[in-house]
Amino acid sequence: MQNCERTHHERSEDSESTICQLFGRVYDSGEMEIFEQPAERLGLVLHYVIARTVGFGAIKLNKAVCTADAEFYRRYGRSITGAVSFQKQKFGPVPNGVVKELDRLRASGKITPLERPTTVGVRREYASQVEPNLSDFDATEIDVINVAIAGLERISANEASERTHDALWDEIEPFGQIPIQAAAFQPTEIDQETLTWALSDGR
Image 1 (cartoon, rainbow, N blue to C red):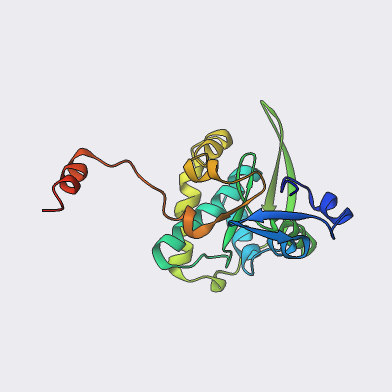
Image 2 (cartoon, rainbow, N blue to C red):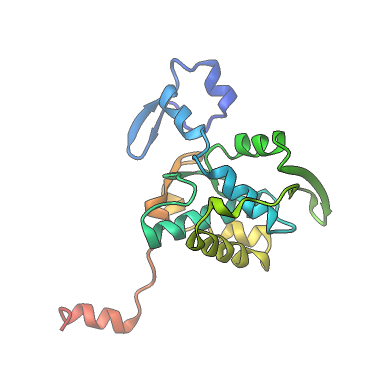
């Protein structure tokens, strides 16, 4: 079986023979196309995050969307964008189809790309050209997105990336799919009080 670590261009050259294993089963190239399509509301969330932030490059933009989706799923049993999974990339989880959706936002005149020099090179960012339509969201969705943004504003992109490298991350192959339902419920360290309670049969 071929490795899933392939680009869209590479897969398209031999689409009839390319197969990948995700979620414990084998997918052919036609099914893999599903994971390259943006979720129904991804563009709305991307636009909102871009409009409400300054200095967010690709890593923090992707992290904001994925964090908001996972947290909203944890609270309410669904994601904000409508996605069911993220793609594992080198610097963290990435919304499926994010490049396509950013291109659509650019083409519609809602965002414009920027390049900012930093101490480690040029960072590509986006600026909003129009105010996002808040009627597209309910109050709980906006609250969760704002919390995700706030949690990233005071840390570096490298720190944001490192926070995603957990046990679930280690279990997924490069460019594999990370189920949002799994990302929403991360294991935590058991404290001594809880351990003592468990060992006493909960009495």
